[in-house]
Length: 204
Image 1: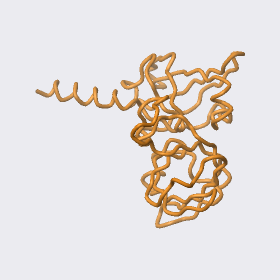
Image 2: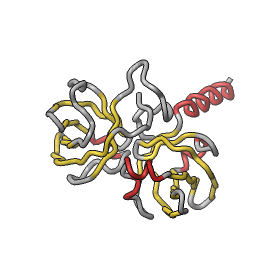
Image 3: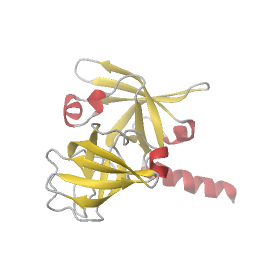
Image 4: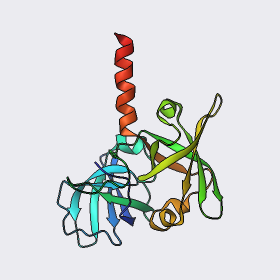
C-alpha cells in the first residue's frame, strides 16, 4: 500500500525487453535505498512494481506485458517518474490509501495557470465514471489528489479537474503535463469496495 505522497522524482535509465515485458533500471535522486530489500514494492508513476536488484542510487524492476498494456509512461529510457516506497505500519497517511494498481489511462485535456495554482482537466475512461466524485480522491501518476469538478459527457465520457499547488508541481513530474498527455489513474480504494457491496446487494 502507498499514500500517494511522492518521495522522489527518478529517471528511467534503461528499458530492456524481457520475455514480452520490460526490465527497467531507475536512478533515484533523494530516495534512499538503505532500507529497500529485494522483493520490496516501489510505486513508479503510480504502478506498484517489485524490486529485483538494488544499487546505491538505482534499483531495477520487471514490468509484465499485462502491466504495460494498461498503464503509460514506463517504456522509454530518459523518462522522469514519480517514486514512493510502500507504507509501513505506523507511517503517517498524508494522502489516501493507494494500492498501486492502475485502473485506467486518462488523457489531459487542459493544464491552466490560475496564478496561485494550476487547474488540471482530465478525461477518464467511461468504466471509471461511477468512482469519480467531487471532493473524492484520485491518483494521477501516483500523486494523491482531490477532485474539484466532475462533468459527464455522452460522447467523451467523464471529465474531472484537480488543482495543483506550486509545491506539488515542484516535487512531482506533473508540471510536465500538457494537453494530449496520457496519465495513470487509480480510483479511490474505498469507492471500489462500496461499489462492489452495492452490486452484491442489488443481485440478492
